[in-house]
Length: 195
Image (tube, rainbow, N blue to C red; front, side):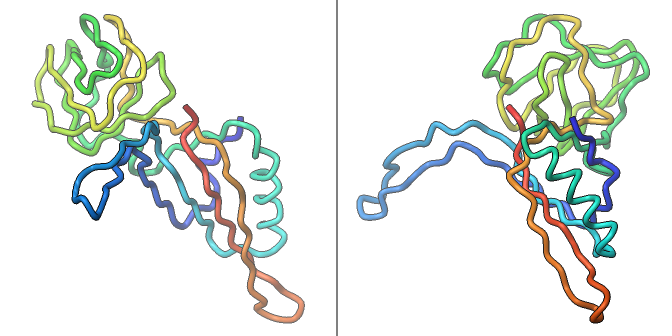
């Protein structure tokens, strides 16, 4: 498993791959719905580096092509709201395919729309759709995509240091000649969330 969180990234584009609808434009109605699964796709671009440094970074990424890559985003992996020291936990039974979670904490806590969270029994990252209140006790959290697995009471929820688990789709290298004896490179990594 390769942790790429501290690689020299300059750009990060995150897109969502969701189930989509295909329209019949002649009949002006929905024709079919794909059976895809919600997942995040990443395109990470490094800073422009000296050739020697870039080759080392590329080798590490190339060696992890068939391996799991972990990535903690410097901003998006951290809660905008308030994560309590005593953890946020699931209460009751939260069913698979549900887009709401019943959560609790003994201390004041809050999740804001756009926060990403993870649950202990799943590597998938979930996005919070609506703000919760800043309070202790039980609250319902709405997600932008449904749970993959059921959660039992006491399952821990992570709202800080949220880790994306990715599979590489390949490394694209680009280079430019600054002088006849020097070449700078930047690398682009395209990856998808491992489900």
